[in-house]
Length: 374
Image (cartoon, rainbow, N blue to C red; front, side, top):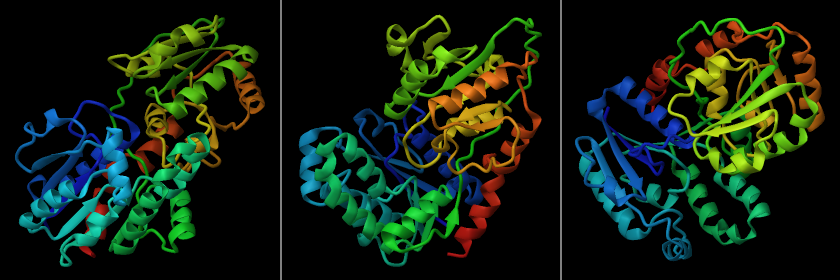
């Protein structure tokens, strides 16, 4: 089976947001299931320098979608992320590949999907329901309403044209039914490779405060959640809170407190995970699934998290996973946990959950079997 893989995530660069991680995960699964020589990458990028560096089974197509004039022009043509000229280039490339299957990495390419050769089966992976995500963003940024017709048209076409639809979680599956009256054919949750290595970090003194950790890159939902947590929760708990993640150093002056340390970008996250007693994930809005939740589980970390941060993860009844959606719930849960001076650094049951449910390698046979039935 020959597979064309089309993505608009910046997988050719060094960044590793949740969306990029998920796209790279999908590409890894396809290569493991069908062989790297049978998977042909079509990467649509905003970085012109990536185009000549692409080689072998990887082709790159440059898009000016970061510039407002191109965004407006494309939107007026009902195209979301790139214009018809680039669409034609991608179609010509995919047609000459003579693939059996096209794996599309989001639902904003409906006009492209409509023009794909009819003998190519279409697999649509939905990172989220784009129309629902846009409606939520419009409440914060009303100017984005101009994108609504183009998003709606493309996502409707994408869903209608796809032979198989893959969603991240049951919430997205329900939203898919709500907006388009179609169910997902497969739910493939957020997963990651197992890079955990057990280390001996030594004993802490009995007087040490509970060490809380947030891990995540600087983006709107993370900035909002961390700022809210620092202002509304940290003044009322017996704990110390550390924030690491690319770009967060820009908030160091604004958010540093006696019990709050903003580190930001680091080379290696592992030591911060090992030193923490628990992870905090106060994500108040978003979509899809949060990759850092899977990462926390990989390290076997007790976790205080909102429903949004835990969306898609099967954690009901699991000890040391605390659902908190208000400041008071976070304060009460953390203070009760902090009353136990023998803070743990590792929970075997949480790590077992990761190995059974959210370890990428487990899903290779499932994806291979489902695509072969297409």
